[in-house]
Length: 167
Image (cartoon, rainbow, N blue to C red; front, side, top):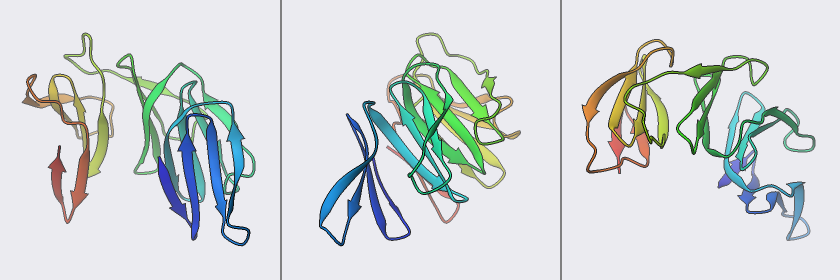
């Protein structure tokens, strides 16, 4: 994953998180020895989804701490100041306090499911998995399958001007 924070370029790689030092035109490591699958930045916090769980930094990546270690996180998002983890085995965890406490979100159908994406549009959250698109009107506490589709997986959402684009 690639992220720009305050004119600083950061990347998540198969071996950690690196930052471009523009003065020296070289990369330096911020965290190593873990595969990083997603990077997010909101409210002066960096959140990384990794092959071991999620990390957080409150000082632009200088220090990191584990906030959840439940296995491989396919993707991590920060939605409305809440950390949302999508695990490769279908679990969906949400933290409303930057990783201090977690709750597992329940949704159906989910057998052999893989959660691909979670975004916010207006007062709703949308989630895609192997069964289609789900909607939550209570910030992930409950979900309703609103677009059942098992033939096509929606891997990515983009929200622009209150319109959701999916591919």
